[in-house]
Image (cartoon, rainbow, N blue to C red; front, side, top):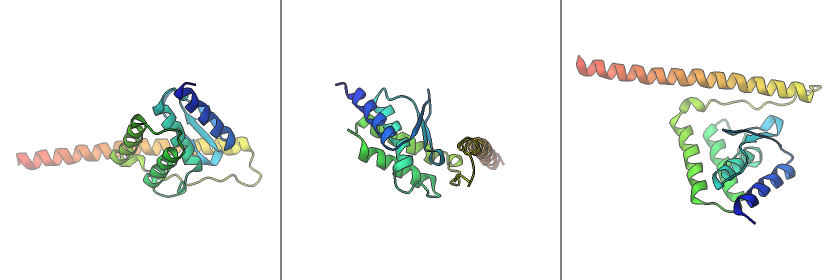
Amino acid sequence: MNKVLKMHEHVELMLKEFELNYYPRRRGAFAIREADEVQFPPVRSTRSYAAALHEIGHMRGKHQSSKSVMVRERWAWRWAKQNALVWTQGMENTRRSGLAAYEAHPEWRIFRPTLYRLPNESAEDFSSRVKETLRKELKAKKRARQEYLESLSNERRARREAQEG
């Protein structure tokens, strides 16, 4: 049996075993713990397998309620590596580049509080509330990124003026 097909079947088995809702995406990946939901591209390579395991790691791994995004990311990757059928150099590169992206973009590290389903709240209402929270989080991240880029621009301008003056 093809190695990637085994990886695909492994992910499918985990989704079923852990009773996770899976929604395929063309790009990007994320997990919504409050809704037992993961979204990632279909497993078609060792790298997409690593990404899928990482998102499942956000659901099943240790320290996923930490206030630190970096703690959650590192532990989700640790879970992925420990539960993979195999861990290739390409998968390791995916892990490293994912962590490096968070380290390079502090504006991505906004803490999202854990959401819980309210008493008498329907699954549909809860899902809508979670998605609205995620939309607000994305908007806040975009705003924080813009502010961060503006601060870098201001620092550069101040350095130029100091050198010229």
